[in-house]
Structures are given as structure tokens and as C-alpha cells.
Length: 142
Length: 140
Image (cartoon, rainbow over all chains, first blue to last red; front, side, top):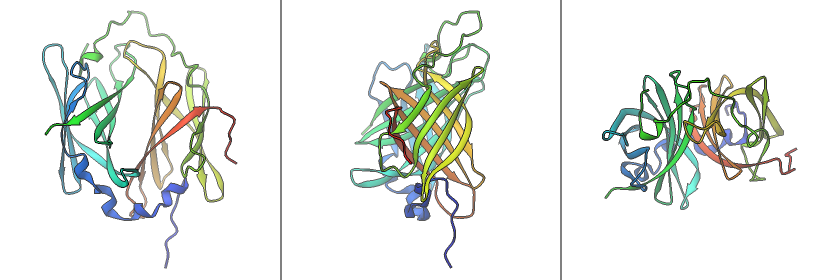
């Protein structure tokens, strides 16, 4: 008996979504230590992505005025990336770093061997700072 | 002020921040891909200082109206009040979709995070699509 699936758009019905292996497909492309291509960045300098089965953990180190600032090691949500990279589908990661005064939401994906992150920084204090976006690029450390 | 990275460190006037400059964000955004199987167009509006997004996606029988949801605006820097992007959340009951939009040279790059809360066993998925502001092509 076939199951009727709820949907809000056609891509919800993509057959790949019903295959659990899609969640970790080609995850090796993401796993490892990544360094910012901009040595003078005022944002995140490096990212470490680790995998244990279907679980992914992300750590980050940002540039600080008095030295590097370590961001909390955080569990990421793995999502099937329906776009294809070099003819192959791969996983993308969504992760939210929580600080008491702000939170940084980001997604990480590999595009032509470059790790691309887009950070949405939300301030939770009343400092008057605007929530802001920054996009950065990383290469894999050998 | 606390900081998680150098670029969080900005000088802020003691006066409350002014409104966002949103002229580059308000309007109808249309998918650059006429064959999309996802979000066809979005309408960003402002009323009384609050911003909302109405989304239309492609379904088997035409457009599906996701209705309107509130958005959070983002600038390009902590000291800027020019809108450079947004986030919002749709809860459909059986699924949730989080949207993250970033404007680059007038193009809206939309990251979509779709997760399922039903028992269908479907894995969550990520999609990135591109939109331009009201070029006249409406999906019917």
C-alpha cells in the first residue's frame, strides 16, 4: 500500500528524501579542519567538522582582539543537499552557536572544494547592534 | 559589550537605533529558475515597522500559498542599518522550513532548511536558490 505524503512544494516529494543514506552522503567532503582563505579575517578563522556515524559536531575559532576566541563545540543538523557538486549529491550542515549575548546561525556546504559558510549573527543583548550577516570561505588543511 | 569575534566590536550611539533602510528588500522576488520545484516567488512587505514575507511554492497542481510569516532583518555589519538579508520560519505542522536570505548585488540568495515532523521517514534537506526583484515573470 502506498503512503500519501504531505507536502508544501514538489521537492518535498523527491525520492532521495526517503533514502536514509542521503543524510550522510559524501560527508567526507565536509569532515576535517578548514582554514579561512582570508588571513586577516575579523570573523571565524577556522572550523573543525567531525563525524561519528550520522552525527556531526562543529567547532570554530574566531579572531579576537586579545587572541583567538573558541566557539562552543556544537552538534550540527545534517541535511540532504539536493544540489549536485561535481555530479554527486552531498550533505550540508546547519548549526547554531549559542552565546549568552548572541547566537550565530549558519549553514556549511562545500562548493568546488571550498567550504562556504554564511553566518547570521543575532544579538540578544540590548547593545543596539544590528543583527548582521557575513559569508566566508575556507580551504581544507592538509 | 561582549564579543564572539572582532567584527562584533563596533561603536554604537547612545540613541536607540533608527529604522532599517529596506528599499532593496521590499517587493516581489521571483525565482531565477523557471523550472524550480520549490519556492517560486516571495513578497516582502512592511507595515508599521514590522516586516512580513508571503511565499508561493510550486505544487503538483500549481502554486501553493504558504501564507505570511514575520521576518527578522539583518544588515551587513553590526553598525549598519541597511537591510542585507532576513530569516524567517514556517511551521506547517508536518514540516518546518527555515529561510535565510542574503542580498548580493541585488540578487537574493535564499538558503532553505526543510525538516519533517511527520512519520514519513523523509530526511531533512537543504536547497539554495536565487531570486531577482520583480522582473515580471509570474508562475501561474
